[in-house]
Amino acid sequence: MGFAPNPFYGVCTLAACKPIIRRRARIGDYVMGTGSAKRRRSGYLVFWMKITTITTFSEYWTDPAFRTKKPFMSGSLKLAFGDNIYFKASPEEEYQQVYSFHSNRDGSTHADNFHDDVGITDRIMLSNEFIYFGGDGPSIPNELDRFVHKYRNHRRFADEDATPAIRWLSGLGDFGVRGEPTEWKYVRKRRFSK
Image 1 (tube, one colour):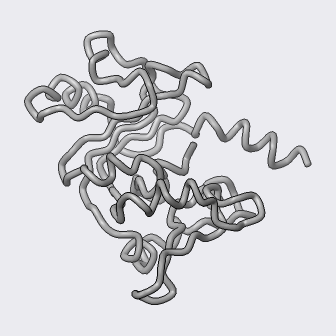
Image 2: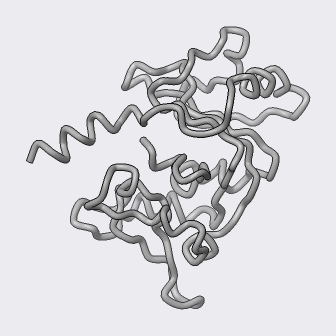
Image 3: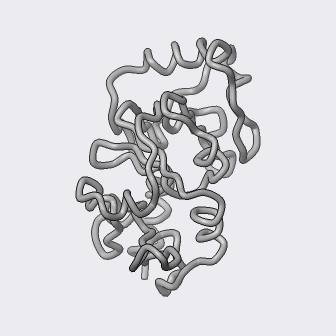
């Protein structure tokens, strides 16, 4: 969707959703995301990233390098889908959620999303070694089928077991954004058909 993960501005970030992955991930781990059956993209690669940094929501919010990841809802879809959405007014206060695609339509905090994003872990994964294909990703080869989870969830593999998948991912070309998020065409219809 362009939000989780957010592949824009030279860094792929996973700062929302996937709380168990964010809680357990380590620097050097590979994360591979596949398409949804709902959009008929099951078995296709959406993105992969090698985690190069792990940070907290507060560090992410205050780091000037990630100012462009703060959502601007009346801007382009790239700006609107910013995932830098949690901040504390002071260290002793609770996190607050800014108006984003993870809040309610009126801008108020979406309780379920807030819980999934912040309530389970205060960790964000970042990578400058990633490829984001969006809706244009390649089909995952049959021999790598065991690395694809058929339902909404995740699996973890030991380094030596993941070698075939890492070899395939590493051979897909240069890092960066290669395609647009599949969901954007549906978001555009809703956003501009008012």
